[in-house]
Length: 205
Image (cartoon, rainbow, N blue to C red; front, side, top):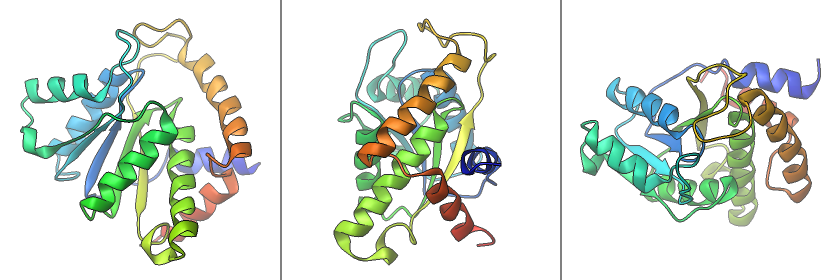
């Protein structure tokens, strides 16, 4: 098996645990992501729900402001919501969300994204953690301290398109794989080997 195969196997089977922050990535399939985020919050997964993403192009792409309104309409108290609506892409979501987590002393994050997007989202967040480690020159303040637990949002069939989209989820999964390779070359995505090492670091804790 390749590092990619092993990484994906572990990514989608990470055990859930109580966290400091449930992070829902706005964007495509946002309704399903929010539904799972609310479920995790209500089950005591974390005391705060972070909605991340400023890009809003309905019906295909919903931003954090829309998700916040939907969450409040569903009964969530506004003071339980952290809204990040400055970011316009996944890397910016990682930068802004980790900043918000640091400001709230949040050490454990449940990262909610669609199954086809979760690998790149997780590797992007991990790349940002490693970048912060180099900038701060203090591993204890970043990768070793912050735990990101990937959670795949429930979705419909892989051969169907997300609401408002024109590509199936299977096609989007392939596109995401191509993007991972491109962004790894730019340093915006961690490698699969780095992802495996990160999971290993947290095993048994």
